[in-house]
Length: 99
View 1 (cartoon, rainbow, N blue to C red):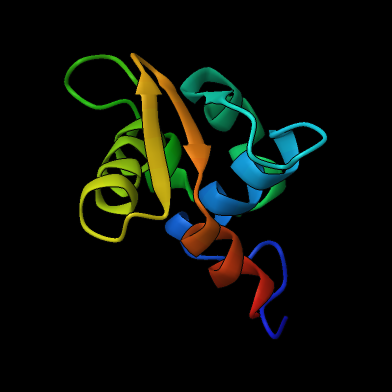
View 2 (tube, rainbow, N blue to C red):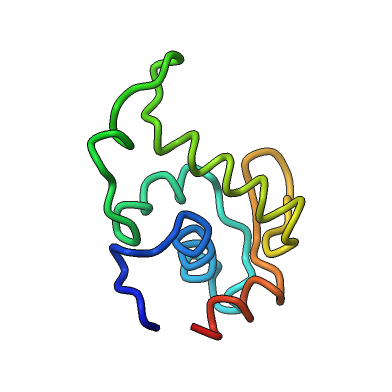
């Protein structure tokens, strides 16, 4: 773990949140709302991240949604359970455990 919590990349921060919120087996489903609420505990949000985008939501919400898409569809480190709910895969656990 060379990086401090505040230096984590978006993907790593999201994986850690999903892992920690995932319950006893660490693979339980987590709502995007929980990720949005907990992201500042894992990643330092800049003024730019907090600025509202054209749809009125903070920019960091869009960063999270984009990172979740990559984690699910390209890297297979998160699995989409149903609308707005995800869980970490074994590959995702391996990634955060290897740091």
